[in-house]
Amino acid sequence: MNSPSNSPRRAHDGVDNLALVAAYHADNPGLSPGAISAARHFLKWARARKVPVRDLDASTVGKFLRHRCRCSRYSPNQLRSPMYATYTRRFLRYLEETGVVAIPNDTARLGQHLETFAQKLDAAGYSKVSCTTLLSHATHFAEWVFQQRVPVTAIGDGTIDRFARHECRCGEMTKHGDRVLTSHYKNRKRGARALVRHLIDEGLIPPEAPDGASAKDQRLTGFEEWLRRERGVTSETVRRYLNEADRWLDRLGAIPKDFSAASIRSIVVDQGEERSRSSVRMTVTVLRAYLRFTIIQGECAPSLLHSVPPAVRRKLSTLPRTISEEVVQALDQLLHVDR
Ligand SMILES: [Zn+2]
Ligand SMILES: [Zn+2]
Image 1 (cartoon, rainbow, N blue to C red):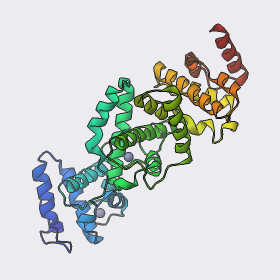
Image 2: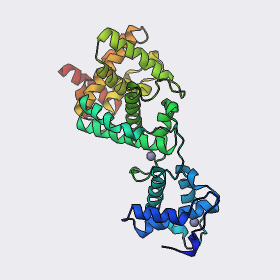
Image 3: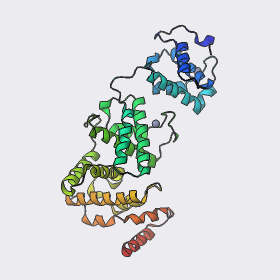
Image 4: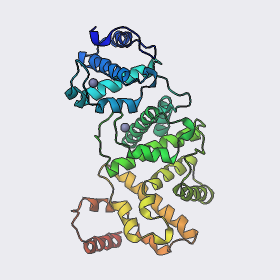
């Protein structure tokens, strides 16, 4: 593995690149030559750029993968390969785990709480599919937060939103390519939010993050109080209701008097195929509850409650997209009459 291009002499930051790669290989005997080569190339590039090894992070990996490679013994084509990116991230992970890379003390390490989070979801009676989806996005969130070195005190709505929108280059767990689809964006948000709520409940992260509670949260705060006070529901139910409401609150509209029958209907009908029947029923239940809450505040018209279609309307979502609004309404009426 030795070569003139990575002689054992120490760099200005006191790290011996050759020894580092040798240790990496010794700790991971199964590594492929490609993985070793990527690690050496990364360190060589960092040294040329005078980036100390302890300062390497996800953004330096990004720069490395984009650099116009003229490094001897390496080719620019290698850098384009997704496998090369994975190799480099895996090496960075090793440097992080072994403490070679310095991680600020206040960086949120949410990964350690995922197990209790999973147990909580399970105990809360979520379906297996919901559990898996929430947990997978929560795991991704924990990883992203760590890679971005987000301080634990800074986690809030802004962080969740940035996470939901990020073009994923988180590495080995990247499955969805660069573009963030709308449904994917929402699922990411749900997973991250569920984890954050859990951590706040457990007192593991502060409830009032500087990122700030948004206006949306204030709307949910009122709803939450109302649920507890008027409906006397359990904390777990409150949490599930808030998670559900959070999925579509933006689509409902910013001001209750602007809520429309069309948007209310679309929230129930236009749900992804992956949503189970019981999930759609949940949407209907929570949407009705939220509208009742808003009506009681005198903020929206009581008649809007009738715009919430029954959960069976899910079947309509499989109709062609070109179907006219008139036909939808006619079917809607039929379904109402049938009940
Ligand atoms: Zn290079
Ligand atoms: Zn990612």
